Amino acid sequence: MTTSRDFQLSPTQIDQYHSDGYFKAEGLFDSDEVKELGYEMNGIIDEWWGEDSIGWRGPWRDHYLPEGQQQETRAVFLSNPQYYSAAWGRVLFHQGLNDSVRALIGSAVQWHHSVLHAKPPERGTPFPMHQDYPFYPHDGPHFVDCLVHLDDAPLESGCLRVIPGSHKQGPLEHIEGEHTRPYLPPDLYHPSITESLPVPAKAGDVIFFSYYLIHWSEQNQSDSWRRSVRIGFHSADMRPVDHDPTTPYHKFMIDGLKKRGEEAKLTYK
Ligand SMILES: O=C(O)CCC(=O)C(=O)O
View (tube, rainbow, N blue to C red):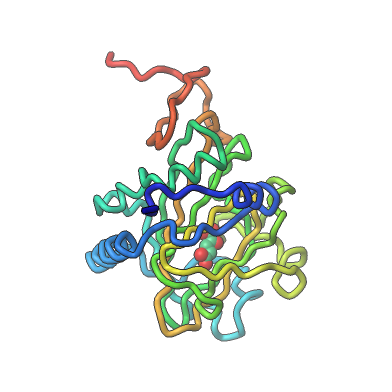
């Protein structure tokens, strides 16, 4: 029997990741795993470790939401669920997820972040067109974001939308600053002028996408929650762009062996 733990990407899926910048792996987490992870995530939110907010802030809201509704959206965000739940810790080493990431970016893989984006029913926040690169710029292209779906995400739930092939442009200039989360200038990139593709998903599906891929999403207008957790992994020889190469940069290795390069050793002195 094939289980989600020995899930293997097909050559077509790997090709799609390289040519389009994304692909969806259906049922990578089986229904028991989704149930456990969803239950633990709700427990974490109920303990109120999560942050309840309107969603990403910034002037992009004027371009994406009708007048009067710009500050009316809701979201629950939470970073690093593995700090609160062992099941979420095990996800980092989930065999199907690790095998997939290795097939996309190579055999030495370092975990970078895990973050919950939960969109409540009816007014769950939209996200503007953006790449993930400006949120955590690194010195190479081999950075993959994995969007693990805990709920079904049909069109009306504000599912992920992507611009296939846009990752080939590399890092683009975003509007950034203290007042906003990074977003692409709406006169150049906006749903009204830029074609994009919705990627509806089911609970247990994972969308893999390059951190250079342009993506966005609409409001959740359904009557159900849309919870997903984005987990970022990169090739272990990459570093944050402003990182001093002679100082250690350690996070969990989830696959393979990290080479030392110029990096300083941790010492016991
Ligand atoms: O899941 C969504 O609705 C969008 C998430 C997103 O833009 C991101 O994780 O960078």
